Amino acid sequence: MIAGLLIPALALVALTIAVVRGVERCVPESIPGLAALAAISALLIWGLSAVLFATLYAAQLSSITALAGTGGWRHFLKLGAQAALIWGPIVLLVVSTAPRRWTTAEW
Image (cartoon, rainbow, N blue to C red; front, top):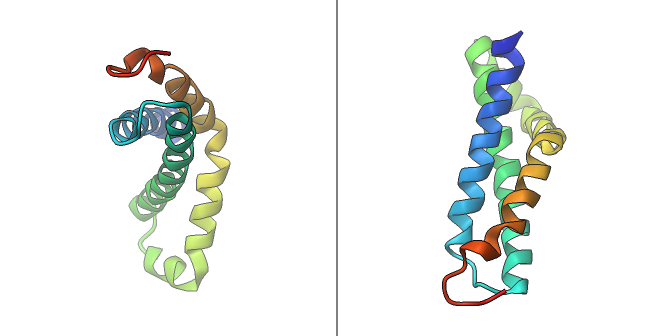
């Protein structure tokens, strides 16, 4: 149970923090920049979490190519969106603390 639930959840949390902090370097230090940071990060994490779920499925199933060929990508995108219950609050926390790390602009 731990390997099936806790490890993927922790991997998703670590991925979320890494992606948001990485995107943070590319957006301007402003309020619209914070909005762009949240939107870009959420889209990237949604896609990456879908890839994470596909990788986990591939590790367990040998017929992952059959699933991917029959519209399985929709299933993985749906799983990535459902995982927003895990990564959504993390995105909001990291984005809301971004102004503390600003070097040129003042909050």
